[in-house]
Length: 137
Image (cartoon, rainbow, N blue to C red; front, side, top):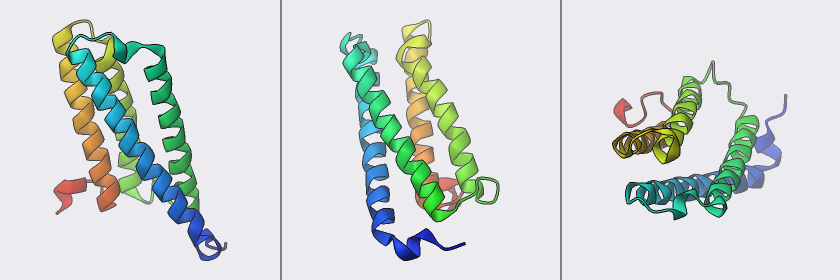
């Protein structure tokens, strides 16, 4: 099979830039919304912010899947990617409880902090290409 990076290196660079930008914006929006919830503000749960979050995460996922295909990664072979994908599911659940599903304000705060820690761990795994992320060094 031909390596897609050989005939379209521009596609890789553009997709990586889009993915990193989407990660940055998505985590920044999640952080802002989580802080808003922590301060008992109403705006974080308004439809426009929820939909912006969904839109950013859709772009992020599409770019990630494109990179996955371009680089021909396999989460069972490339264990760092497998760990990253499992932690992505954990982040989604923690974030959902951190923003609205937890029953108490204190629980929402704890879930929010755990979600942020998970997001930072995912980012470190992606940067290190190692399942332990920043702990690998």
